[in-house]
Length: 185
Image (spheres, rainbow, N blue to C red):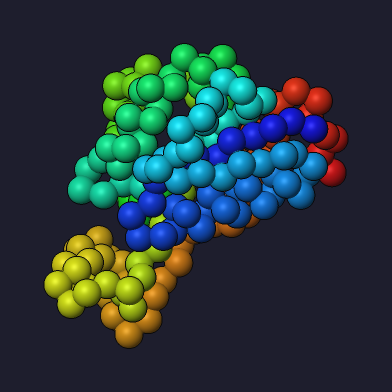
């Protein structure tokens, strides 16, 4: 089985949770997986030494984390040489209508164009509203944003919108791109 790098950026923790879940799914198929936070990657990290790379980031205020963009920009040549995938986490991705998800897709497209990376596959992933973890001001702002979008506004609880089955299918599709990919059941 292959060696796979999963690098991510996370602002509120959902992208980290998703990256760990991806790492677990890859390990379950027999791959050797390294999961790293792209804000502080090990100095010796070389994505070109892996058989495949998945990068994830979340969208906040119209863009992905700048340190993820720097990571991808720095390693775009290596990322373009191996099977690679990108997942982008946002609340916009929770909308069932593709037209409503278009702003998130446009941000992904701009990110990839700016970095010169051409991943084999991408996925928009619905994030989470973690009201219980927000400070008062952020809770009020997020409630207002969610309300305008017709989303969940009860700040007494958290909401997770990530479609784990869709994420598993994404991992399966990526795994099929890897050298010596195991048979899918």
